[in-house]
Image (cartoon, rainbow, N blue to C red; front, side, top):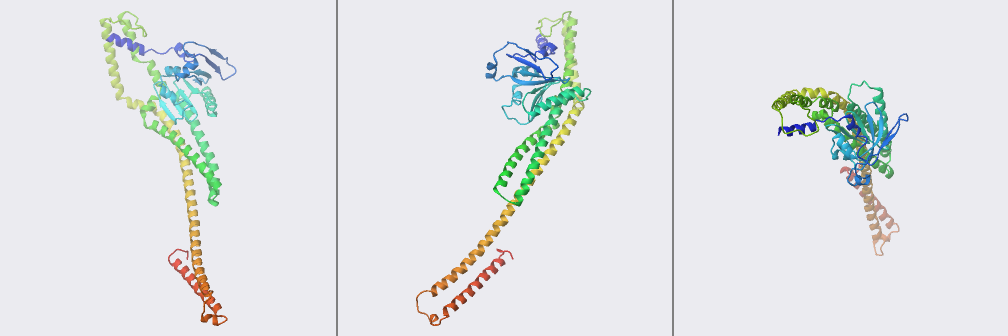
Length: 432
């Protein structure tokens, strides 16, 4: 049982050598081409036939893609890697790589894993490790800007206090916040004149333009809100921020005490125990006691470390927390600008509705006046029609009798019309 634990632990505690890391760039692909972005360095390509063809890989969902590798010294290379190679070397599950797939539309996400940080911020999709950045190659201008800016910063600012992964993450946040803020300002400059023109003259063309701008505003607000929520989520969770301290975790893994335990055990037993080979089921007694003491010391150390874990995490994540807080303020300001612009659109819509309601009220008032005038005209026409019939009456005995009938009827209708107006004004149907 103990020998089985030793063999399992020895296999898990293998530290990747430089040769193992070199296999990262010549993966098990049909063709793996590497080209430097500067003309002074030579281009080289390697071919390794260790698996099926590219078509077979794509059928199983492990198709190759073009990536850009950026080292700590600021050098960049264009690679062609498959998903399986990235998953093995970065210890990432396949669902994390789906977040970076341009064929799918995923919201902005920042994930901290054991050996990498998965970043999906707008057009910047990359995997950040403690030693390098694997950036998904694209024709978008943000990718080229991220590549050139990160290389320049790494070459010029070699004495920065922040770890490599924080510097790479900071540039991704900076470019994302800058891009979103520029889009908001551009939309703001376009939409304000249209809203002012719509408020002065309501037309179908202006309404259609405002409708399109409002749809663009809602989509942009959702994108900015998602970036803000992602940064806020990281700031609220100390565990996620501690998971993103890749350089410190790498340094701790290099000095893990279990390696010393294996060396001590091998010296005490008089044999050299290989870390990769399975161990013999037979162990000396002194080696067994040493192993038990080593496990007990590790347990005591873990208990002591758990009591001080909170303070240690606070010191470890303080630079990252300050970095996230700075860009949280920037993205929150951008979101407030969008919300104020949305409020201005809502105010304009309310003003237009009030204006249209006022016009509708005036039309109703005019309709009331026309209806009253039509009623009075109908009364006058009825009286004139009655006296225009062919019947005998004393009125027709006088030559001007019919004229007097018309005059009296007209005066009576006018009095009726003014009485209607006074009644409507009394009931506040018409303005006074």
